[in-house]
Length: 262
Image (cartoon, rainbow, N blue to C red):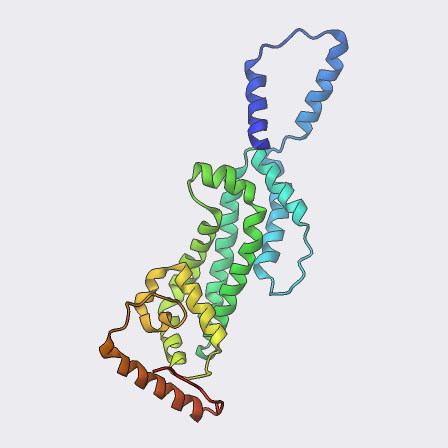
């Protein structure tokens, strides 16, 4: 709410008639004005001092691995964002943030394109998990920009915007290469770990639910209630599929008893 307080104070200052200062009050007024001017953040200040701090922190957050220690001051970054919002630099800051993350995601996409098929699924999973993990830190750091600019002026949400960037610059470019590999891996037990498969399928569903139509059976294994209820005539087919999977598990050395409900 201090943003509104800053705006309100400026408006009152413009509207109120200037009183005739007494000699004793002149020094106090000048001192107060000097302090205010010292706190003004010009666009040059933003570009040379404030954005570079944010840029470096975002770099580290986007490239961190799970469990990494990030040597940045979250309090300092949070304060930088707040000051820039209060000084009316939200539009520029949002533009810089989007450009920064877009450039990062384009590099990620190119790296995925160069991946061999046997590493493609795992690398996509790492890229997706790393980005979603970074958003858990980036979005809270820019909460003031989100509240006082993105939500109020753009009628959007920062997290939604940043997820959309991954969809557009990574997932959309790779979905038609990724999906056949996922379907192939699904038919070959243990080619891809169940956790990796689950992470990717759930992630794709979060990014764009309509991608379910590309592989309904695959998505239904990890996303509940996305397929219509089974007809009685289909139960025998499902039982046959379960028996086939049980034979494949045994052939691949999985000797524990596996119980399928038919």
